[in-house]
Image (cartoon, rainbow, N blue to C red; front, side):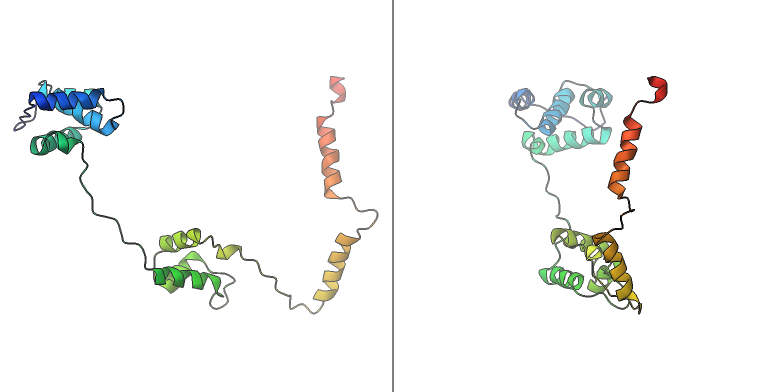
Length: 193
């Protein structure tokens, strides 16, 4: 049974155009299912049957029936315009975020966080994330070398560097131990021999 107040009148010319949309293999699928809804309505099918045939929900069926009654076939092949989303951030704001990310962080912080940048620039965290991604910036990954305050730092550094440059004779590298372990694990056990 159809919804009360819905009388979809499909003229022979409209039917021909709708059937052409359905049979056109290159037609967008949204136009095809919209045309099928109207053809099923014109054939006297109820809303439940149209929903079953098209796989669309009741409000969708009703929306396209109403659109066809108001605008005809052209209404089915044209989407309504939507208001645009939020306007993009001004270039000055984007540049301010980039400049902040490239400058030293405030206070005792070692690097800028997204939230700190957002608060300092007066924009949302997601906006900061988008700007950093667009400019390929990652303030948290900037590595700086800082000298230690330890009075014996130079002596310890020489010891550490010396071990890497000239290791003791009895030292075993991690690479050779890994190879030995992998050989042991792949060798057949005595029980299998």
